[in-house]
Image (cartoon, rainbow, N blue to C red; front, side, top):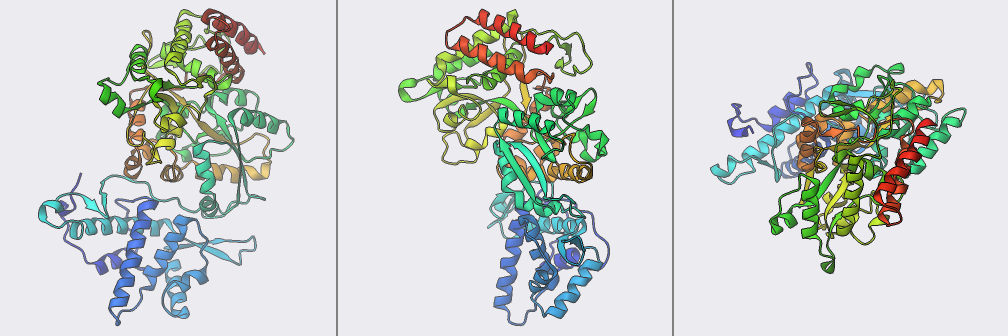
Length: 597
């Protein structure tokens, strides 16, 4: 990490920085160290307080209208508030005519952009241009550096440490705040979105006002549980015209939705390169494809991991488990119902939840549920053009997976058979569970709550492997796609909204407001993001090790039915109604019927 006292630059005066970065003369300089919205606000608050103190202390000072208007413009941009010319001039601190003239200079120089607020084009909202944001990013980084260099240390030794504003300085490429679109989207009634009711999409709902400023249109979002989301998406296709401009699609549904024609291929409505496909985690991007064409953009790439209490493991002298056998041993050692502690929590609720868990357990033992072709790192789940697919549920490895789930019962909470997505993580967050299988999107239950016993004490692992398997982090999450029956006049604007909602800047904003999913490498590598959670570094490492895989739930058109079937039969097995062999036999026969329909 570069130390600000050793970077070879002479100390700068505050006025030099202002002149260099906020001058209305000359072209923009390239931003060398852009920072994100949270840090931009901290710098704005510092400069506002600093200038106020100077104005109070020195009666002969005069306001800097360029600075005052810039502070107001960028603050409101980050907070998603509308700025008009009159409100911006009012913030300048100088007489109206002078402020109007200074604003005109900023408009002429390209620091401020106007966007029509109405179809007539007679009224405008004002927004910082990319040029201004680049300059402000540069200024903010230098202000932080100067503060750390000159104010953050009381002696020379302390000055060698990288501190600023009470936080650690991290030198690295960060993603700036989202930019407003040059033109507001023309969508009557606003953008209509159908999503899953999970923490990440709820973060999007909380940020609705800010994104309405970014795209220049209202946002109407409806959220459903996973099964109801699937049903509503199918019902929507039966309508003459789609009720939604964008819909969230669970990764395994891609094959079904593509085969039934529910989604538009993205390459038919936008230039795919605008999405920067190489920036997405490989498994997440591949999972959006069917027959070689992309049908959605990853909004959440959320692998299911094993969460474990590092402090409990350390106290017991137990190593984090790398195999299913080690996991069962650890669960046995840490299971103590008399103290209200249990070894592990997982998806064991009947139907869809348990069906997912069973398929992932099969993957732990090296068994896909179809006769997928082996490839380096796992299996090829691109099955769109195959006509020789056969189910491989009732197999020797499938039996090991089923028996493994049955063994987990011995070290699970008493209500495990009703636990699904959220129920398995809540008791873990409450300090009652040693380990829990859970998607990264559920990590906010304990990562965002300092009162949680698991706060700061959680480690992240891929699924421990069975004897014939290898560590795997089954990729889940949602992609955003455009319904095929959307009206023709809304398609172009819907595509622009889709790009805006899945950009690196947007996805970083979700993380900063509580999400723990990062579909893009650039977001996971952002220093501000990494400071928020170790989960991003862990997932990136799994991706580079090729442990992120989407083959455990291959996206065949019938996958939703097959998942539900397996979840019903395995639940009967866990309840002791049928044996593991019978559960596999029943799952195989019922799934074969579903595969043929």
